[in-house]
Image (cartoon, rainbow, N blue to C red; front, side, top):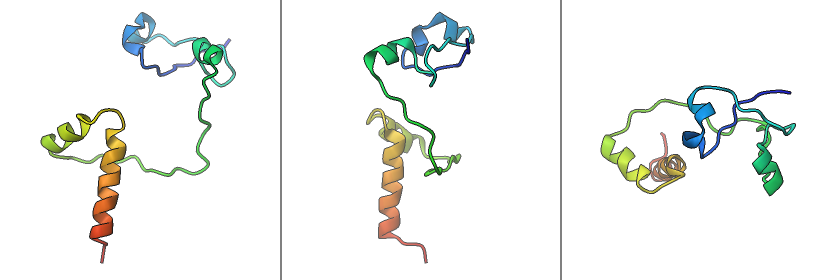
Length: 91
């Protein structure tokens, strides 16, 4: 039996995760039993990375405004930067 840490939106309710214990996975892809029974499909690994991980410092008001829009705020920051690049192409 393998153990694997499975990120879950209910992690804050799981005492094992809060204690740093690994979560047991029953599926071959590491899916939780609940996900398997619900027919939830997991994404496979990317063939080629489409995005790069970077660290960027932004004004607090900018971050707060994007976070206030809910889940996916980082994607919206990416989209806003792409729109800006269309209007201001590098020379």
